[in-house]
Length: 398
Ligand code: NDP
Image: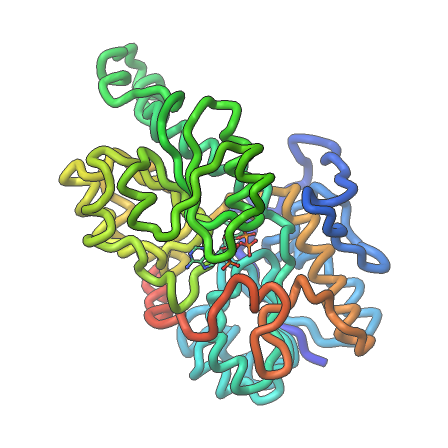
């Protein structure tokens, strides 16, 4: 079989020869009891850089032994890209949301042999799910592999925005000691109202982590949490997003991007938020209207916006979020810590082992299977397409 693996580039300084730490903690189980990925074997040392081209998700030896053809590339955008050329006879495509190989309807039509699209991570919105359903392509992701990685990053970003950490750091780099400049937009999180859009793996983990900060916690969800959890965390449930954003100081977005959540945060919704609210979005860039966010930061309706997700990815050099005020944007990194990579590389191997041996892939990994939404896809997604405009990712190169 032919496997096309699309990964981000190696560091500009070259593939690492040494690492900052010798080991990473060994986890036994995910917080909800779900088993960690359990392939028969792994050919990498947890803690290595696996998500870049040379790391190849630790799959090279495994696929070579089985005599499969493996193509590894970072060149994914535009009709002349390696990905688009290799796609035509690929059986399996693997890519990470951080550097997504967009599988639009047009690309899926060209991929005559494609049977399986694996997301090495969580979030399969880079695949036209409607087209995958129509073509009978299985879409699978490594559910829970980096949910806690992201939850930790969200806490970091909320604190960083509310305290206005980045400008203070920059004053030090500029050799200054400008305390008044640093604190003129700096607040405490304690006592604020914080709301999560969705309380799935990430959303619930964020709510749990924020409880000790003495904040008032809110959430909105399609499937309400149990009374026990609501009581334990002191959560206020909102039947709709509007009711939640009106009372919150901080909003953290934790739902997938699907046909119903695209551009959820637009001028209309943002205008209903309290003046000076903060948004942290590590879910997907397209859940927000990019121009509306930039406008709201400039007008002061929003006091800050942070996140690591953009649309498209990589973000074009002239993307409005690269230059808007009071932002704490990073490239898409929260879910690809070295710790997370060890889990999703093992998860991808587990999925491939099942696929090659014609065994069922874990239900919790499935988004689309046998012509319909399946597994976690049924719970968290709606059928549809959110890849429109992804061809603009090629502008990053220009
Ligand atoms: P889960 O599937 O556990 O949670 C998603 C939740 O979103 C579900 O509980 C679902 O609830 C809810 N949801 C879906 N649609 C809506 C809606 N319209 N309004 C409110 N809630 C909704 O996934 P995770 O928590 O693990 O991940 C969530 C998302 O975070 C991923 O889909 C991905 O886009 C992003 N992510 C980002 C990463 C990064 O590196 N920045 C890494 C990992 C994930 P219900 O079932 O009730 O509909």
